[in-house]
Length: 104
View 1 (cartoon, rainbow, N blue to C red):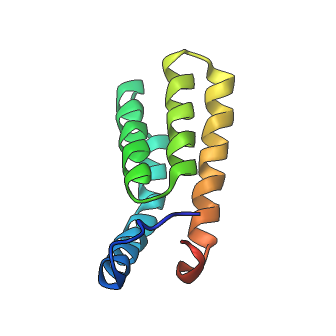
View 2: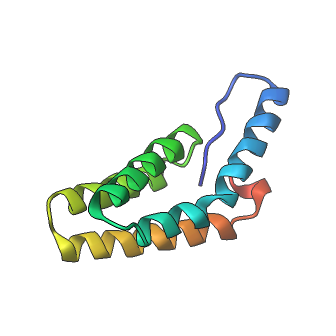
């Protein structure tokens, strides 16, 4: 689940929720870019961007999974990388299946 910053007023919370929804709508493309990266560097960059964006938009668990996947890739641990990539894909599916009004 994602979090919305607290104490910033209802207008900001509403706007932040819209931004989160836009982020969620783009997750399938981000995952595709990771899974079909032309090389290890492109995969690393896509994972790094996902980790940062997910954290910034309140999806801390997704951010951690992206970092774990990136670390496994960097360490050359192919089995661990593939396992982490599967968990990452499942997390994306789960996030996309969560109704927007329950995402926060």
